[in-house]
Length: 284
Image 1: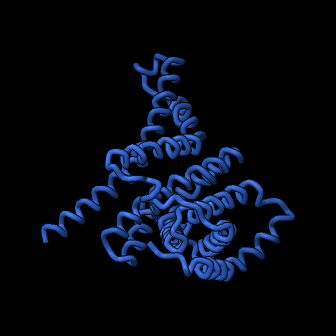
Image 2: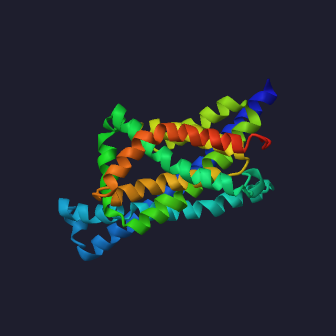
Image 3: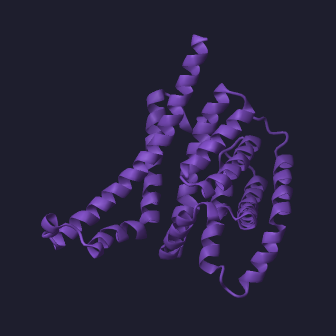
């Protein structure tokens, strides 16, 4: 009994450590930039210290933070990676081996890329049909404004590539593996998906990132490599960025509508294809 309690406390501690690193770094970067914007405004208008902020001055402090939030989150994602390597250095554990950062087949890479696109369209279709975006209207407006303000290349590099790499390292590579070492497979998949969903901080994103978390864990499990879920996540997020920037093009709208209608059966087809391509792969 005492041994089991110690094992679960250790498991919980490691998961909290991994998630806290990314959370704290993200908030620290945002706070530091906000402090910079505040100091800059105080230098411009030192009388603010006596009379306080007007609404316009308050907006001048917050606007640069909101306009650069994707860039700030990208920086946080980059800075978190060496911290995870440092943690595993202290644990005397090879991080690359622990997260299974190893080669995968060309077929896996191709199917993963296509899966990312069709899963994005399938989730968008489900969100539209179920209207779950109405559960967090303020967040949806906030994200729409952020994506509108963010340039295409910043969005693709940050949201499309760097953030997915860090999130897969964290949630599939670290959290899922810690769970797999200590509890059965099904609870491991569900718990890491719950943590992944909760990390996004609002009900709408929780619901669809929970589903994403399950699919990404299965892709990871079947391939025994972190690269396929990373590719799925990259193409999923990049598709969102491209649609938000280019989706209103007249020639693209009919194609997106057709693909959206086919996205759910295509997701099932490509998931089955991925499973069949890896059925001889030993599951860790």
